[in-house]
Length: 259
Image (cartoon, rainbow, N blue to C red):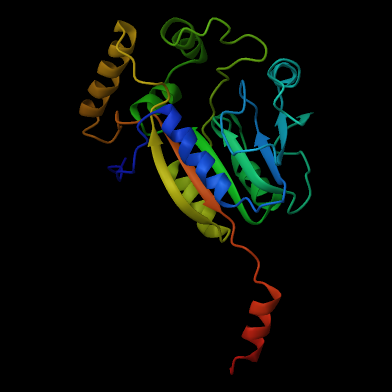
């Protein structure tokens, strides 16, 4: 395992949400409605993109997760039970494809990434959040059985519903494409622009004893790995842009240029 290059860090969960919200607002044209796909649905839509000038479609394999979003959280305009590998949204359907802590659970994640690109309009954004498999946290998730993850969510993070229908954690797979190197390669192979990459702690910083134990563990793992497994962050945010199509005026200028 090679030493990892450093990446910029967000300083809190709320700061990470602000960064991603700002990116989405940057492509929003006044008077036009953004079509957004949430590929895999968490408890709620965390981003703030201003007024209600958007349509949020959620797709997930877990019908209970979708029921909670549709009937209790009530922030989805459309909820679809489906597999991201086989669901068909056609071509150039969405302005934004947002996927938060989903790809690491999917065998065949490369196909999902290719679908994201196909579903995205030119000029649109793909925003992906995954636990970095080569952070101390992600390495531990890859190397431990699922029952350990359940105990961590229930005892350390205090999520009493963890593992129940509609609630994570779900078993992790970590296909080859689901890594910093894999996402970069996907962008390069498909003409996409990786405009930003951030490291992020998965939880707000806390000072209780359990959190301090987790921090001590991840720092120890970083030392034992000679710095290859970072304890500075757990998760990675990728902000990916699909180049816009040239305008008719651009094409006319290009055609008029001498060869």
